[in-house]
Length: 133
Image: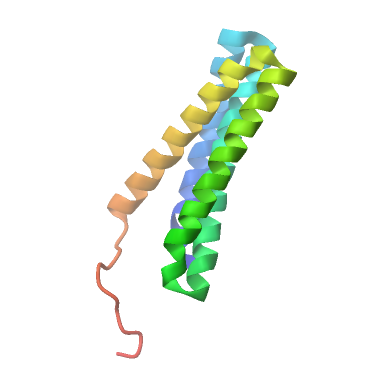
């Protein structure tokens, strides 16, 4: 779990900033509905990515070989959950669907960009280091 702590903090900070920007842009373009729907989409994306990272890190504590199946399982669950939530938003508040969807897209771009920048700067050994030596 300690490995994911490195990129979670900057990604969550950037997601928070993206949510504020999304609220501002959503408010300007879609009024009050956009002001809450766009940051809600950013939050959904951020929670999805953070949940996936935590699930994969938890699987790694049991066995390294479980990380790929866990990543695929969480991806499938996350995709189904996002589609379900988009369907609920479309039914409950049709005017909120575009800003919400744009918020999900913006949140995903913000999260992934931050994670890529963090990975580029991180000092990650590409070989397994023996802790006994």
